[in-house]
Amino acid sequence: MGLAAAGRRKHGPVQPALFAGVRGAGIAVGTAVAIGSAPIWAGLLQALFDSHRPSGRWWLGTLVAVAGGVLLVSPVGPSALVSVGHALLCLLAGLAYAAYAMLNKRLVGGPASPLQVSTGVFSIAALLAAPVAWWLVGWPVPGSIAWPVLIYLGVVATGVSYLLFASGQRLISAATAVTLTLAEPVTAFVLATLLVGEAVPALAWPALVFLLTGMHLVLREEVGQARGS
Image (tube, rainbow, N blue to C red; front, side, top):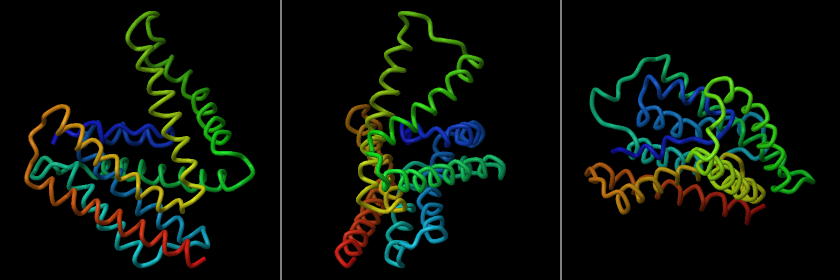
């Protein structure tokens, strides 16, 4: 479907495994495995390490949403077949993202504000990543287009988006937060269709219905549990 934008993951702990996985599996399949597994990993981690365990209805909504998300970003046919090693790397990326969400939920649940948490987490990540980036590709040439792109990715795509994510985690469980990030393929689908003018396969529409229905079920369950607590 050409939804390459859905394959762009910004999460520091996720990137090495995801990039290695999609290099062999392709953006569409690798992204489908990573984003499809992340909510499931998050539900399992929450069931193991948190007193707020996901309910059966939460699992139903999540699985429906995952099915829609996978269908929305993955190709159909022999090209979807990938090696076990690359699939495992993409699964590892999903697990890393779920673990990040769980830890971030603990941090924003403490005295620190979401702004403080996000600033601390991504400042440390930037300090760790900068020497590696310099060693691998060097610094961007002064005055090149790379600098505006880097600033946008750092400030908007990472800083602002994860500040909103951290703020939302104060109100909902970590597993639900991960499931709701399945809205990313929906955004990519809308942008690819309306702005880029990509052709829409027939399978995309039922996939979109599945994804939105599953997210609706998850939200209803989260709101219901919040009202009952």
